[in-house]
Image (cartoon, rainbow, N blue to C red; front, side, top):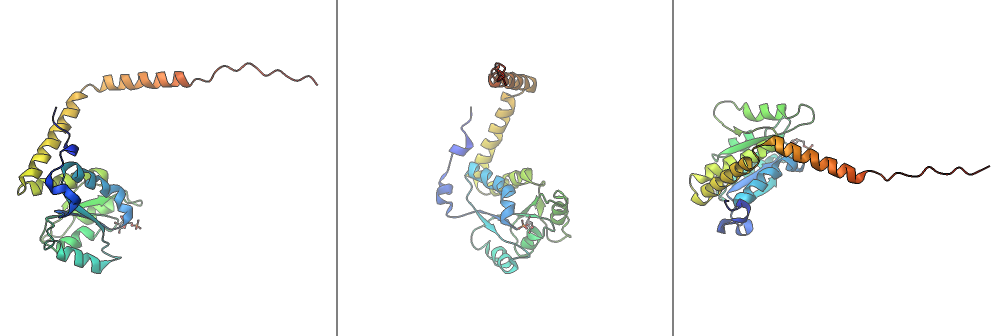
Length: 207
Ligand code: RP5
């Protein structure tokens, strides 16, 4: 068994003092999606920071954040946004750091609007676009770690360990029919425990 990645915290993670990754999002409502990126980085022991930076509600903050990220030591930006999602593209326009975009699932169009807004950047300013929603948040963090891994060997090794554990989990549960059977058996057991006791019929009061 390989050691759990989450427990193998390295020196980098101490206090998240020097974040290498900036996770930004257009609204605090995007956190539900972006927290999955943060969790993966926690597991890998990669220091990061999180900020709400809205392209249309706080445009000056966006310029300030994207313009200063490189000098502050950030090496990759993960930007999540929903709807007419211009945050990742605008961020990429203000920095030469790699920007990974996470399309947040919108109510109106289920995130298709976010996906196209982020992926369809005109040639010249790229945004690496991930899947809509939770999978995109997870994969943005893994891809950011892979990018950092080309320079930081400890991050590359943490990513290798993450992959090994993931493979182990799949191989350890390779027969879904057994898992389903176990599941059905435990549901049946639980429902038999919950069966209400037979009540004796109430005696009618005589008038
Ligand atoms: C975008 O608008 C945000 O990225 C968010 O996904 C969406 C809705 O924002 P709220 O109205 O929930 O703040 O800017």
